[in-house]
Length: 383
Ligand code: CAA
Image 1: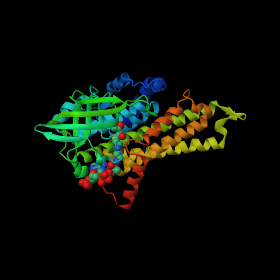
Image 2: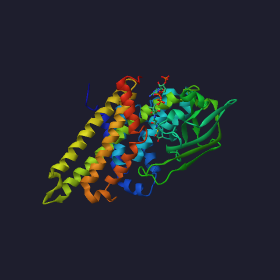
Image 3: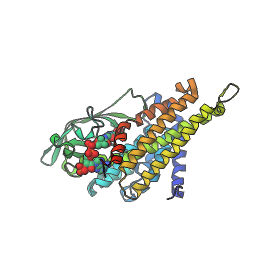
Image 4: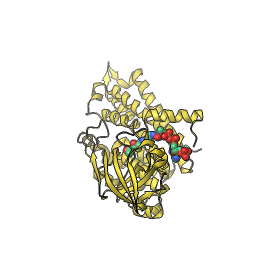
């Protein structure tokens, strides 16, 4: 076992940390208040090779490993959650899934422009009536000659209004349960596909989240990913990748909470001394540090397994579950340490709390992860 970062990992961390702190963090508060999705930052992420970070060079990517992917997500979310979300949906849920399940033609047509940052992509599974119960989706696909005709609605889709490509799941036969679900690659220009943005979210306000409407959308047969009925497995394998990026991002968010708290502990005085001297404050600081370090170990264990091609559903779920809880508790305590100032958007910690609250819900609620862990422990669930 090696707990150190390689020279390459340190370089990636320095590069992304510098980019995120110089170009993302200064605008984060304003973009959050204005619900502004900053496409220029996403363009810069493409120029830096982040949008294809773990994709092999032959498919337009940077050929990095999963530790680097985790480091990128951690440093991005330390500045602002919205840009880690881009990594989660564009890179992890979509591009890595095309790499694993796509045929050569699909990789040439979709993966390469995505990895180069020329096209933006997302992942569409959740529906108005089906979030955790993903095997029960209602969007239908019907075969008509060389096409499938899709009808239905997706919601809570990150980048819905911004993406060029969609990895979307529909059922060919609902009576077959998850065995009827099939995966499709859709393009924004397909007739009958429209999108909208959801406004008024509690957090990730600088991120784009929306709905997708499918009205008799004709999808060519060559845009089916995998075989008919393989869609649920494809979706779950995609989520195994996405959850690593959410977990790594949550470590970054918890670090941001700790950093803001440490600064405030030194700057703020009460009862004649800086508040860092008070033991109840120290307890919160110590717990944040413990949570960050343990969450990071879980993230990099999952990354290590992925680097070695070992299925890590259990370990990735654990990392996502734990790291998101750590981030939420760190944000809660950071607000406590900031007192009334923590309740104001003059300080960043209320944004951290709102963003952490969402991470506990998407890509598997904490209840779903609790059940997954219990089922593995009891032997009811096996890989
Ligand atoms: N990889 C490959 N195959 C998998 C798999 C994985 N990780 N997980 C399950 N499967 C396979 C199983 O092996 C099984 O196949 P077999 O019968 O051939 O063995 C099949 O899929 C069905 O698996 P389950 O019985 O475990 O399915 P389930 O209906 O019990 O569901 C669940 C399990 C854990 C509840 C799952 O539905 C789940 O994780 N739900 C949460 C969904 C979720 O995270 N949604 C987030 C959407 S993405 C998002 O939010 C981000 C965004 O912005 C778009």
